[in-house]
Image (tube, rainbow, N blue to C red):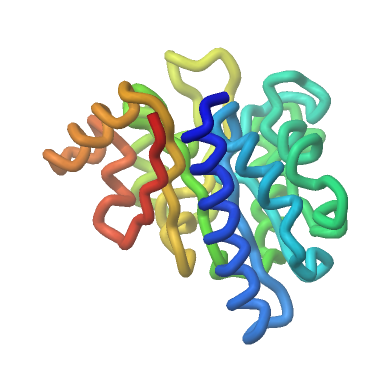
Length: 221
Protein backbone atom coordinates (compact mmCIF):
# COMPACT_ATOMS: atom_id res chain seq x y z
CA UNK A 1 0.00 0.00 0.00
CA UNK A 2 1.21 3.51 -0.79
CA UNK A 3 2.46 5.74 1.99
CA UNK A 4 -0.23 8.29 1.08
CA UNK A 5 -3.03 5.75 1.60
CA UNK A 6 -1.54 4.60 4.90
CA UNK A 7 -1.26 8.22 6.06
CA UNK A 8 -4.87 8.82 4.99
CA UNK A 9 -6.02 5.82 7.04
CA UNK A 10 -4.14 7.11 10.09
CA UNK A 11 -5.63 10.59 9.72
CA UNK A 12 -9.16 9.22 9.37
CA UNK A 13 -8.65 6.95 12.40
CA UNK A 14 -7.51 9.95 14.43
CA UNK A 15 -10.57 12.00 13.40
CA UNK A 16 -13.01 9.15 14.16
CA UNK A 17 -11.29 8.40 17.47
CA UNK A 18 -11.66 12.05 18.49
CA UNK A 19 -15.33 12.00 17.48
CA UNK A 20 -16.02 8.92 19.60
CA UNK A 21 -14.09 10.37 22.55
CA UNK A 22 -16.06 13.60 22.30
CA UNK A 23 -19.45 11.89 22.22
CA UNK A 24 -18.54 9.49 25.03
CA UNK A 25 -17.96 12.47 27.34
CA UNK A 26 -21.65 13.36 26.90
CA UNK A 27 -23.28 9.97 26.31
CA UNK A 28 -23.03 6.53 27.85
CA UNK A 29 -22.56 4.85 24.46
CA UNK A 30 -21.46 5.89 20.97
CA UNK A 31 -22.18 4.29 17.60
CA UNK A 32 -19.82 3.97 14.65
CA UNK A 33 -21.14 2.90 11.23
CA UNK A 34 -18.44 1.60 8.88
CA UNK A 35 -18.33 0.37 5.29
CA UNK A 36 -16.81 -2.81 3.91
CA UNK A 37 -14.51 -3.55 1.00
CA UNK A 38 -10.74 -3.32 0.82
CA UNK A 39 -10.32 0.48 1.12
CA UNK A 40 -11.12 0.74 4.86
CA UNK A 41 -8.88 -2.12 6.05
CA UNK A 42 -5.85 0.07 6.98
CA UNK A 43 -8.28 2.49 8.65
CA UNK A 44 -9.76 -0.39 10.69
CA UNK A 45 -6.29 -1.44 11.84
CA UNK A 46 -5.32 2.13 12.76
CA UNK A 47 -8.58 2.76 14.63
CA UNK A 48 -8.34 -0.51 16.57
CA UNK A 49 -5.04 0.74 18.05
CA UNK A 50 -6.65 3.88 19.48
CA UNK A 51 -7.03 4.05 23.30
CA UNK A 52 -10.82 4.33 23.47
CA UNK A 53 -13.26 3.00 26.09
CA UNK A 54 -14.21 0.37 23.54
CA UNK A 55 -16.71 -1.41 25.81
CA UNK A 56 -18.97 1.66 25.39
CA UNK A 57 -18.75 1.68 21.59
CA UNK A 58 -21.32 0.10 19.24
CA UNK A 59 -20.20 -0.75 15.69
CA UNK A 60 -22.31 -1.74 12.71
CA UNK A 61 -22.07 -1.69 8.92
CA UNK A 62 -23.64 0.70 6.43
CA UNK A 63 -24.57 -2.32 4.31
CA UNK A 64 -23.85 -6.01 3.86
CA UNK A 65 -24.08 -8.80 1.32
CA UNK A 66 -26.60 -11.46 2.41
CA UNK A 67 -23.94 -14.13 2.87
CA UNK A 68 -22.67 -16.27 5.73
CA UNK A 69 -20.43 -14.34 8.14
CA UNK A 70 -17.56 -16.70 7.35
CA UNK A 71 -17.81 -16.01 3.61
CA UNK A 72 -14.94 -14.13 1.99
CA UNK A 73 -17.62 -11.73 0.67
CA UNK A 74 -18.81 -10.81 4.17
CA UNK A 75 -18.15 -7.26 5.36
CA UNK A 76 -18.72 -8.48 8.93
CA UNK A 77 -15.78 -10.86 8.50
CA UNK A 78 -13.55 -7.90 7.58
CA UNK A 79 -14.70 -5.95 10.63
CA UNK A 80 -14.03 -8.89 12.95
CA UNK A 81 -10.57 -9.58 11.48
CA UNK A 82 -9.31 -6.00 11.18
CA UNK A 83 -11.26 -3.73 13.58
CA UNK A 84 -12.40 -5.89 16.49
CA UNK A 85 -8.82 -6.61 17.51
CA UNK A 86 -6.89 -5.94 20.71
CA UNK A 87 -8.73 -3.53 23.02
CA UNK A 88 -11.26 -2.81 20.25
CA UNK A 89 -12.55 -6.39 20.63
CA UNK A 90 -14.52 -5.06 23.62
CA UNK A 91 -16.81 -3.06 21.30
CA UNK A 92 -20.34 -4.34 20.62
CA UNK A 93 -20.64 -5.32 16.96
CA UNK A 94 -23.97 -5.78 15.18
CA UNK A 95 -23.73 -7.64 11.86
CA UNK A 96 -26.55 -6.96 9.39
CA UNK A 97 -27.45 -10.56 8.61
CA UNK A 98 -29.44 -13.26 10.40
CA UNK A 99 -30.49 -16.87 9.78
CA UNK A 100 -33.25 -15.96 7.30
CA UNK A 101 -32.79 -17.25 3.76
CA UNK A 102 -33.19 -13.85 2.12
CA UNK A 103 -32.72 -10.21 3.15
CA UNK A 104 -36.42 -9.63 2.44
CA UNK A 105 -37.26 -12.22 5.11
CA UNK A 106 -34.56 -11.05 7.52
CA UNK A 107 -34.75 -7.27 7.28
CA UNK A 108 -37.38 -6.87 10.01
CA UNK A 109 -35.37 -8.93 12.50
CA UNK A 110 -32.15 -7.04 11.76
CA UNK A 111 -34.02 -3.71 12.06
CA UNK A 112 -35.18 -4.66 15.57
CA UNK A 113 -31.59 -5.37 16.56
CA UNK A 114 -30.36 -2.15 14.95
CA UNK A 115 -32.94 -0.12 16.88
CA UNK A 116 -31.07 -1.02 20.09
CA UNK A 117 -27.90 0.76 18.93
CA UNK A 118 -26.85 4.19 20.20
CA UNK A 119 -28.45 6.39 17.51
CA UNK A 120 -27.74 8.97 16.25
CA UNK A 121 -24.39 7.57 15.14
CA UNK A 122 -21.29 9.50 16.15
CA UNK A 123 -19.89 8.89 12.67
CA UNK A 124 -20.78 7.17 9.42
CA UNK A 125 -17.82 6.16 7.24
CA UNK A 126 -18.98 5.87 3.64
CA UNK A 127 -17.16 4.41 0.68
CA UNK A 128 -17.98 4.89 -2.99
CA UNK A 129 -17.85 2.63 -6.03
CA UNK A 130 -16.84 3.55 -9.54
CA UNK A 131 -20.57 3.70 -10.41
CA UNK A 132 -21.18 6.30 -7.70
CA UNK A 133 -22.90 3.90 -5.30
CA UNK A 134 -22.45 4.22 -1.56
CA UNK A 135 -23.60 1.71 1.06
CA UNK A 136 -25.84 -0.52 -1.14
CA UNK A 137 -27.51 2.40 -2.88
CA UNK A 138 -26.78 1.27 -6.46
CA UNK A 139 -27.83 3.31 -9.51
CA UNK A 140 -29.21 0.18 -11.24
CA UNK A 141 -31.10 -1.16 -8.21
CA UNK A 142 -34.91 -1.43 -8.40
CA UNK A 143 -34.93 -0.61 -4.66
CA UNK A 144 -32.95 2.64 -5.03
CA UNK A 145 -36.00 4.91 -4.96
CA UNK A 146 -37.25 3.20 -1.80
CA UNK A 147 -33.82 3.29 -0.11
CA UNK A 148 -33.51 7.02 -0.84
CA UNK A 149 -37.02 7.93 0.35
CA UNK A 150 -38.08 5.56 3.13
CA UNK A 151 -38.11 6.41 6.81
CA UNK A 152 -37.50 2.72 7.58
CA UNK A 153 -33.95 2.03 8.83
CA UNK A 154 -33.05 -0.88 6.55
CA UNK A 155 -33.88 -2.00 3.02
CA UNK A 156 -33.38 -5.36 1.28
CA UNK A 157 -31.69 -4.70 -2.06
CA UNK A 158 -31.14 -6.64 -5.25
CA UNK A 159 -29.29 -5.17 -8.16
CA UNK A 160 -28.34 -6.54 -11.61
CA UNK A 161 -24.68 -5.53 -11.25
CA UNK A 162 -24.19 -7.50 -8.02
CA UNK A 163 -24.21 -11.27 -7.54
CA UNK A 164 -25.52 -11.39 -3.99
CA UNK A 165 -28.65 -9.79 -2.57
CA UNK A 166 -27.87 -7.18 0.05
CA UNK A 167 -29.20 -5.27 3.02
CA UNK A 168 -28.49 -1.58 3.48
CA UNK A 169 -29.28 1.20 5.87
CA UNK A 170 -31.56 3.71 4.15
CA UNK A 171 -30.27 7.14 3.17
CA UNK A 172 -32.49 8.61 5.88
CA UNK A 173 -30.95 6.47 8.62
CA UNK A 174 -27.39 7.08 7.38
CA UNK A 175 -28.13 10.81 7.40
CA UNK A 176 -28.95 10.51 11.10
CA UNK A 177 -25.36 10.81 12.23
CA UNK A 178 -23.42 13.58 13.88
CA UNK A 179 -20.59 13.30 11.36
CA UNK A 180 -20.14 11.87 7.86
CA UNK A 181 -16.83 10.82 6.30
CA UNK A 182 -16.15 9.64 2.75
CA UNK A 183 -13.06 7.43 2.44
CA UNK A 184 -11.90 6.86 -1.14
CA UNK A 185 -8.63 6.23 -2.97
CA UNK A 186 -7.44 6.40 -6.57
CA UNK A 187 -7.76 8.81 -9.46
CA UNK A 188 -10.82 7.01 -10.85
CA UNK A 189 -12.78 7.58 -7.64
CA UNK A 190 -11.72 11.22 -7.57
CA UNK A 191 -13.10 11.63 -11.10
CA UNK A 192 -16.42 10.04 -10.08
CA UNK A 193 -16.66 12.35 -7.06
CA UNK A 194 -15.91 15.40 -9.24
CA UNK A 195 -18.74 14.34 -11.56
CA UNK A 196 -21.06 13.87 -8.58
CA UNK A 197 -20.25 17.34 -7.30
CA UNK A 198 -21.12 18.83 -10.68
CA UNK A 199 -24.68 17.53 -10.85
CA UNK A 200 -27.70 16.74 -8.71
CA UNK A 201 -29.35 13.57 -10.11
CA UNK A 202 -29.11 11.27 -7.10
CA UNK A 203 -30.40 8.28 -9.04
CA UNK A 204 -27.48 8.56 -11.49
CA UNK A 205 -24.81 8.81 -8.76
CA UNK A 206 -26.31 7.91 -5.36
CA UNK A 207 -23.32 9.36 -3.44
CA UNK A 208 -25.00 12.70 -4.20
CA UNK A 209 -27.51 11.90 -1.45
CA UNK A 210 -24.73 12.77 1.02
CA UNK A 211 -23.19 15.78 -0.70
CA UNK A 212 -25.91 18.07 0.65
CA UNK A 213 -24.85 17.48 4.27
CA UNK A 214 -21.43 18.26 5.79
CA UNK A 215 -19.14 15.53 4.46
CA UNK A 216 -15.46 15.18 5.34
CA UNK A 217 -13.74 13.76 2.26
CA UNK A 218 -10.64 11.64 2.84
CA UNK A 219 -8.92 10.88 -0.46
CA UNK A 220 -5.45 9.70 -1.45
CA UNK A 221 -4.10 8.73 -4.89
